[in-house]
Figure 1 (cartoon, rainbow, N blue to C red):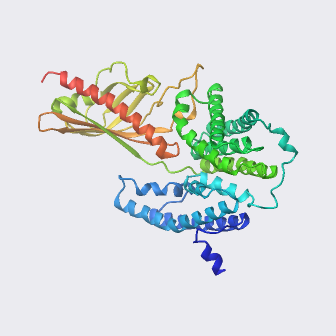
Figure 2 (figure 1 turned 60 degrees about the vertical axis):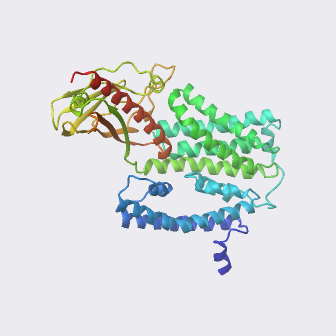
Figure 3 (figure 1 turned 120 degrees about the horizontal axis):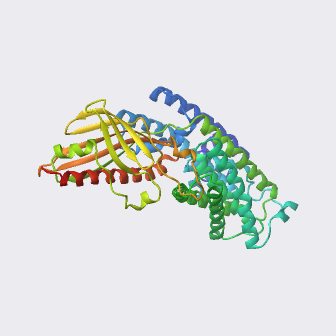
Length: 458
């Protein structure tokens, strides 16, 4: 027993899949209850399994209160022993299965690590008696390189299409199972099927896997499930996860593995993905409140700039490429009343933002909440009307402000800030897109206000 416990901390050696499953399941249960206790004691709220997936990111945020940062540091410190044991067990199991140890990096990929764990629990050990010649079902997979590639694409993109439709249309969920789980599994099985009869090159496996995910995206577009712009934004993340899955599939592929093992792996994925979707739908992750601030310098005093901040005339048609692709852009702003309680309306190409004024500190600060949000974009599609679920309630502005700072040269530093939430995961990836788009919207408004203020008479 002492030797077994000591082995949990040493990187060397191997471990069988049954022992790997039992120890891993016990550690997951222990970690689950530890996180639940810490969240209740430190944060005073209930725990979601997805909170621990992104807990590490809290430490690197700069907009946290010191107490929040301390709480996040405690959560991470409690996770370090489990991270180390997880790395040790994963590396031991990879050696046992005859796979490269560098695949241990998949243990750190959110959501993928659960799928990776399930795969390692199914794969037989190197030299196992379960390794045998293929069964009669092998005849369904062509032996030629082109034939096996086409079969792998068809066999993987159809289940991925059905799972994606279930996630986006039925559950209306744009969470990690859609953007991480499906591409990773699709890449893994595409490479596995492609190399069933003979070992294919890594580049061939990655190529076939990405062709499969490309077919899935094309089918989403053809069946009017999604527009082209959203598919383009999701493409980089999907390509990375698909390629990671293909790398694992390339490492696992071998004509020596019994076809039954491949079937078990497929069953694991087909059962795991709907379960993860249901879990995300039943207990969605907590959406962080995000902040974007942009600024310009105006060659006019704050008093003159203030008038054009409160309301401004119609902007010229956009010349920025991102707005021409369908992203919503501001057109004009008007206000009813003055002071706190006045209602400001900022008209966008997809509809109005309704903004009740909360702070009216002329000519320094205009702060408002947002009670109505239009759609964030118009989808590119050949169909008369395509309206996926993410156009409503998945990118929500909660408030904003204009801050006017007087400069020594008589000018004004004009800062625009938006506070918003989005319900698409992984949050760090979609935040890159949303921050970029909101920054472009800010600059379109701020530059227009600057031009109006600089042209106005003193």
